[in-house]
Image (cartoon, rainbow, N blue to C red; front, side):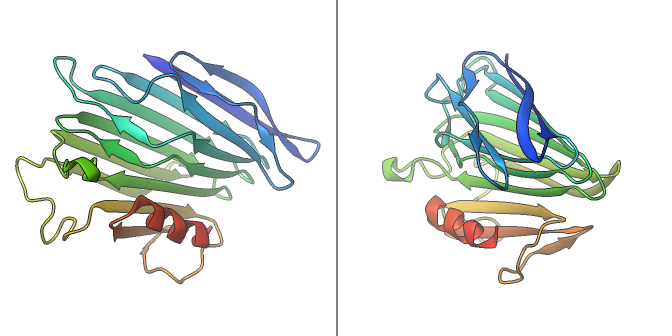
Length: 233
């Protein structure tokens, strides 16, 4: 099991990391300080998530702190065997007045891979939160479209202790034609953007949620989704 813990606080108008912990293969780069926020980049010593890997990530953004969290590269999920695949658990807490941009890189499940991801987000009533979640159907250049065994991603957003939005995705290529109607409809990538108490323009259609909006997008390129979401931040 690999763990990452980060706590960000506002100290005299500047967001600083007051507590952090990580274990191999996860590590973080030295913080980047900007006028409006502090940025943390997560890195891994591994080329991707291996069969049996378990990542536990917890991020706490205190009152009036502003943090941006990014990844070094795309998250690759390797072929699974006897250990049940790769698991990732993320817990995010943003207190009132806090602002958090959670921008991990897209996920690429390789052929015969299994992935189970759970993200729980707890926001104060006046907390600001924006998250992107981008998925590729596989290594398209190697003709691995929807060649993975199982992919699950569950994201729950709570505001003041009340569930505000829940998205539960479970993809099983052996049980359904994921490239067809009602699924990816001929596209290779999907993206979700979650925005709560953020100034998100109305240029992209989305689902209205309590104090926020959720946008889902299909494309044939992760970069196209990243560019579209960047225009919304």
